[in-house]
Amino acid sequence: MRLRNWPCHGYIMPTELQEEASKPAVAVMWESFGPTHHDRLRALSRAGFAVDAIELSSVSRDYAWERDEGADYRVHTLDDKPGGRPGPSLAWRLYRACMRSGARDIFLCHYDRPEVFAAAVMLRLRGRRVYALMESKFDDYDRSLWRELGKSMFVAPYNGALAPSRRSRDYFAFLGIRRDSIEMGYSAVDISRLSAAAQDAPKDVAFGKRPFLIVARLVPKKNIARVLEAFARYRERGKDRRELHVIGYGPLP
Image (cartoon, rainbow, N blue to C red):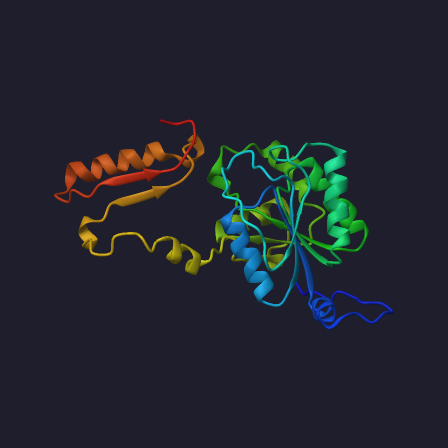
């Protein structure tokens, strides 16, 4: 997945714009941006890429993200409705934002959304290299063969993919993306940001007295109930009296 330099044609630019134009351009899209997305966007910028960050909406349908501003890259917000208003208009705005970025390499999340699929098709027709971002695995849900065959059509426009694990890579390959075009490392986060956020945490607690910790959305797919069952068995069998702390938000009690 090699990126080409952002072209500059026929005029003299100020030094800072020349430096920006000399960087390889890349566009990255998610539904909306949270701290982990900004971790990855900052890393791209620091690695020397001219980054256009595109979010479908300023509000996520599922996550209560803390809003942050991208200081080292351009941010484009396409809508203010949670998840973005579905339909041809959103697909067109996404396509236009990607084209205006000047990027030859474009990374899109939510490959299964019709708007993203339509934008991916148009971008491929314009000669762009399009890559899918996905964390799904075979065992996330009960899978239907016919549904999976239908989903394979949605990954057809993509040149490759970025996945977080071997299981996600295997699932991508099953859907039809060439295995040698799937790279790993999608779920990287900025450890320095997490360390800074933990400065106020107590540091004099012995390891054996530290609680187990779950940080997750409180929704059925996270399977918190299974963790509670395992923790109950652990407390029944062992002498260790460590606590379990669950931190998150969602409809489950």
